[in-house]
Every structure is written in structure tokens, then in C-alpha cells.
Image (cartoon, rainbow, N blue to C red; front, side, top):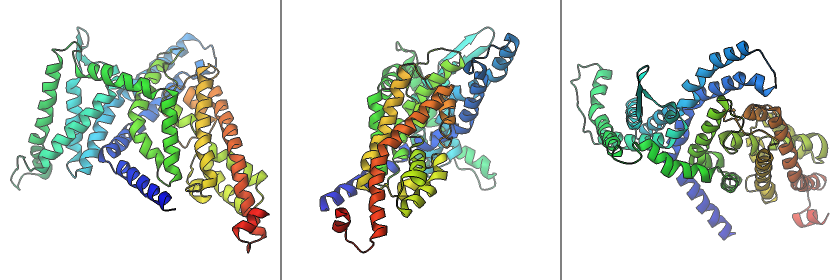
Length: 433
């Protein structure tokens, strides 16, 4: 008992260290800055490609209208996600240092743009490549945001600033205060930019993408890596720790980059998207609908105990929108030894089944679209893949996960039923019944 308690204490301490890490928290919250724009962009690209998805052969003028009307939206939303993330991570990190968030975000964004190669032609003049503002520049944006904000905040905290008289308006005075803390990271990244002009890569973005980001994306986009992430998520949740937040704060940069590459290919009409695994895959095919299937089966069919029926009827409505807490803490799943195996095994099974079904070509690869996690099953699968087959796969996943859960929930239900019939018996006597 003491060994179990000691392990649990160590796990809680470890998860708390991760959960309270300012960089991971800033990364998690910084990505959310991009969410409204990317959600809108995802919906628009689905509408743009809806005739193709439905197999409709519409007149060319109408298809040209759809492409001209909806097409540019992606360039202002999904394809510039690195800009949102850079500003968002810096903004959040500066807030955790109790420094000026807005200026820190602006300095980080400027530092990131400084590292981007600038192209030029006679028609457009100077320009940034759109690909490096999205998936290709994601890791650089994150690194720059953290380093730039660290420098900015440390100089600000040391009070190495230009102070204006009290008569100067506060916003103007604060702008002067930010000059020296902002100049330091800008100068540093200009040195880095200049240094890379003497390398074979030419710029920091291409260097990081080829040396760091591509290998990590290759590793993170594999089924074994995803299964490890899913296992860790469920394992932490079983101990009552928000595993989704912990794990996603680590894997989101990789998964988001994979999703953006799929989105770009899908938007351009590619018939074969580059990746199966991405944020879209993780959000749609890992354990969506698990609680819904269980709640339906036990609320209306299999439960014998009144307690199980009532619990599952309470779980049912939130489960339609993938809200898991009523089941996680209501049964409870947390620290319940009877339910540990299905809690971990069911999402691993749905992940594996979905991966091989998509790899076989029976279901299209996820488009990279941002699908809100509360989107009900079938609809989420349809939106995530741009095909009704994605919705059908979700339904199959729910059936498989529910079948895995049934014997374990049934065992718990039987115990509760015995409790209700014989409330005065001890545990040994109940087990003997």
C-alpha cells in the first residue's frame, strides 16, 4: 500500500512539474491564439472542396467562383499559423513573467520575420514565402518566441530601461521602456540571420526545418509514437491528472505542422495527402465517442443496477459532445482498478484501427482541418477527412471501443447490483454471490 502511495505521489509530483512548466503552458495557450482563424479557414476549405467531396460535376465557372472566393482565406488563416503561434507563445510567456505581454509578442514576431528569407520579383517587389509562415516555420517561430521573450523579460526585470518623466502619457512611456529590452533580441536575431547567409542553408528557417523539424515530424507521425502519446494521456487521466493538456503541450508543435502540410495539399487539390497522423487525426479518431457508446449501452440496455443506469444517463448528454469528465469522475474511472484496462486499451485500439483503415485507402487521410473537439461523432469524422467514410470510421471506432468496455463495466455494474440487493454484506460475501 505504501509502495502504491509512494508511486502515486511521485507521479503527481512529476505531472505537476510538467503541468506547471511555464514554457509548456505558454506553448499550449499560445497555440490557442490561432484557433479562431484556423477554425474559420478549415470550414471555408471544406466548403470550397464540397462539390469534389460529394462527387458532383459542376460547371467550370461555378468551380472557379468557389476557388476564387474561398481560396485566399487559407493564406490569411491556416497558412500563416506560425505568425499566430510566435506572437501567442511570447505573449503568454511574458505574462507568466509579469512583464508587458503586448510588446513581448510584437518583438518576438519581428524577430521571427527577421529570420525569414525575403524573395523579390519585378511584379511584387519583396515578399515572404507563404510556406515559411505556416508549417515550415513552426519550430523556428516557437524557438524565437521563447528566446526572444526570455531576453526581453530578463532585461525588463533587471530594470535596464529608458524611463520617461511622469508627465508623459503612460502608453508612450511604456513604449520607451520596451526599447532596450526589445532591441536586445532583435539585434541577436539579426546576427543569427546574417550568420546563416554564410552557410549552405542560407537562412535559419531552412536549417531548423531540415535538421530538426523534418526528423521530429517523421518520428511523431508514426503509429508507435502516437500510441505512446495516447497511452501517456490515458495513464495520467487515470490518476486524475489532465493527461490531454500535459501530452498535447509537448506533441502539438509536431502534430500541427503535419496538419498544416495536409491542409496545404488538400487546398491545392492533391489526391494523396502526405500524412495520416496530425492534430486532426488525434482529435477525431483516438477516443471520440468512447463515452457515448458506453453510456447508450448501459443507460438503456445492459445495466442492472439503478446506480449504473442513473450514472450513464447523466453521462449520455455530455458524451454527445465528447465531454468525458462526468464519466471520468462519476463512475469514477480515476484510480478505479476495474476500469484501468479498458480506459487505456480502448483508445489504443481505435487509434490503431483508424490508422490502418486510413493507410489502406478505405478512408481518406485527414485534411488538416481544425475540428472543434466538441463536434459530435460522424460529423467530426466527415469534416476531418472531407468524406462521409470518415464519419463511418468513427462509428466503427465507437463500436470497437464499446465492446472492449462492456465486460469491465458489466463487472462494476454487477457489484453495484449486489450492493443494492444486499447492502449489509461485506466485500467477501458479495464476491461469493
